[in-house]
Image 1 (cartoon, each protein chain N blue to C red):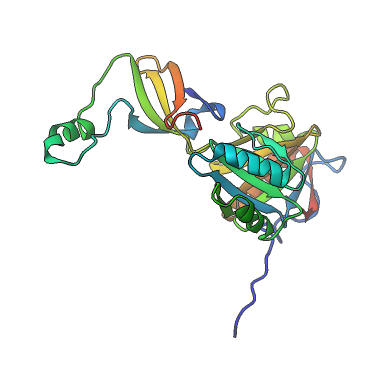
Image 2: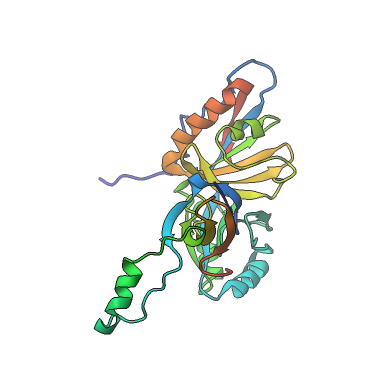
Length: 87
Length: 204
């Protein structure tokens, strides 16, 4: 599998580390009222058969965090963007 | 009694000048440690990208590359190492001088961190330089995609390396962490041995 890093260009998988689901959003508050939202954020994951958005870290290259859209059935990469937006 | 510490090249006593490897004709590559360079990491502060660009242009007559490229200025060159991150390299502002200069001129715009004693820089040049690097570097150095001024940060034999092409000889500058310099040298000379290589005395 090869990932086209927006900064470095196409690189092999050995340069990247998978850092988890990019579709979940951290709850705004630490209040007790948000407990269900926190459980969802920390533990609950969808398991889609098809395109999925994931965080990848380009640790052996530009050290950028990326959001990679990948079809988990075929490993086809449908899109890569910087997680922090354009620098 | 106090001990005086003196700067010592990373490959002193390791990179022995002379002709090594296969054959005794013209070497496939020459290798030289570049010493006494200023090497400094520069990282843009949040929202200061444009102001930083202008400050670098006026202070060093240099352009900060937006991508992985090496752009030479008057006395300082800048290599793109990541979004909003660069390695500043200078042969004339050696020792700690480059970091002091950048810190003063880019105050408030960028975080500046001296890497001069933490990195080793090796120049590889010659007709077989691509073949030597290709055995470990997982990126394409073919002239159609990697030309003078092109730069990359990647890994060779599990060691992080930042490199850029200097000219069409081809020559490349390789930057590795100093603590890995001897291991990297071992890989590099192993890879170069079949083409024959000449070690040139270290200079900046």
